[in-house]
Length: 309
Image (cartoon, rainbow, N blue to C red):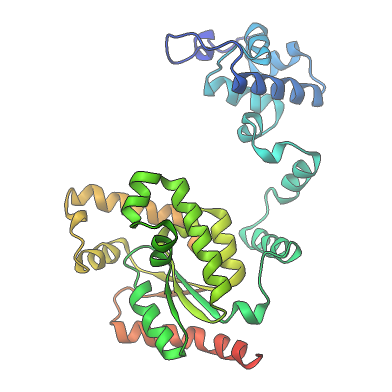
């Protein structure tokens, strides 16, 4: 039986890898463990994966820096996802494996119900009436979160919170300085702290969130659990035009590339924005019309929650 070209299992650089590299050692242990769990000999795994026994032996010993193609074939033969082989935390216990199998193949609606049930089970969400008193607006920059948020807060007679401002307060410097000097990990920590403090300090508020709040699962879960979320939608072209109308002309540099990037970001974030409780299309609408529709969308839920207090 043909085996994969040994060159595919060599490192991309000419420098030999450290034979005791901790990552490669742990990877080899996982391959050996999964092989044993499947009841396969190394020879049988070689036959199923078309990877030579010699390269499998090196891989299991932690001295073989296998290519992605080799790892893909090993995963296929072991019937496991690549993240599990690479050490995803959900591979560390039988319970995780059983939960993964239970969720595999479920629809988005089923997964959403499961997430909400787990959120309630582990106390990650506020009481339904308390949650409805906080309205969080999500969406890309230029969606109208700040403008519509201020109008909505004034209409509901509740505080308006610009989460970006709170992040700068927590970080002690501007957003560009946080990103450029401290990095994205620090930004997400400040975002988390700002969101936690906002939830604690404002039982009743309208919150304008950063466009990337959906990028961090922990922060987005916190937002979903304690606020009614509204996704303000618009086309990439409208997002770009609104940002430039605010005086930010940076997108003009390499306009085509900037627009392509914006479309890609929106496409990647759309599945997460879609988890919002409510959605409002703001594209092509005058400000007054968009505000009227937003107020009509959230007012019944917010008023009912206030009546319970």
